[in-house]
Image (cartoon, rainbow, N blue to C red; front, side, top):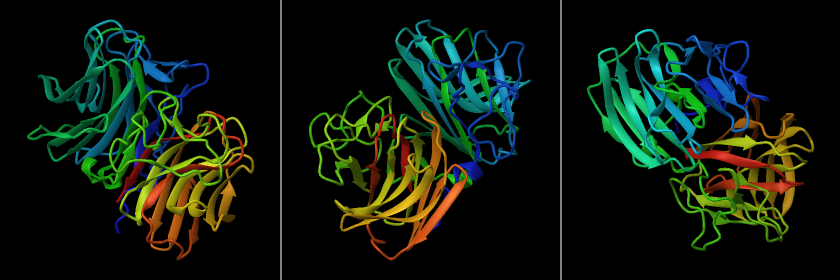
Length: 403
């Protein structure tokens, strides 16, 4: 098996959720992205700075042309770009934000454009912006209610774009540009009320094709929708087999959607809620954002689940300030590997779980542990769950199972 994602911190040129206490401007001295292994930071590239709205953790512009850039290595041979936006309160038409790879002083770039064309409608486009004009590659129109995300893979003049996890659209024969900077710019007028909530940039060696994932879920939906209870209100993943509830001890608590994440707070009741999807693969890489809770919960990705009381967890333990690989066999929970890790409530941490034969490797940000066992090494059910403790605020987001 070829592992295409080894760690977001070593393979992502940028991961930024624009979380900044108190908000403020975005510059090299005022904001540090979540992951920048090249030690690069955002640079203000316009007269007026872009701002972080602390109440919604989004970056917004105030005037046309407001721009920040982050230097990257040479990317003209290809890249993967994901951009999340929150335009829920944006009311004025003609407002647009673009995230692209290119050169700031010529406006040459390849990227993703988000524009309110008419009231209540957001147009998302994959776009090649050149000094000679704009060439729109593909587009999707969605309601401005709720957040949205778009993904782009660019290589050798071929661009593929997917919106909200849907089927990708492809366009060829795009002129190459000097892809040496990641640009985020306020293209038209003030974008107050809407902005970019996440940017992720990777080289092509670190992510599969959009259609090559076994399971993908960004947990978008109405709060308190249950994962996998078998009713008409059940939340379905963006890609892959349905979620199935798997309360791993006696109890009635479920995993539910809260704030576009899979929350272990549940919907009342007791117990340790969990859910899984049968992905069809035992050897795989699982990536997910761990959102730290405000109490002493133990929670995270559940993998190679067989039955209640028989599974593994790649867990963040806030009561022990550790990350732990747990084996749960015949309802006996055993910590098999651990390392110190102190989490801050409300903060997102990048989790990667690699399953290759008998070897389990768990990384949370730059902390890594591993465990080797022949137990359940052909089991194909993976998901997430609460191991124990109090779960207030604890959640998973941006869940993917990939080759």
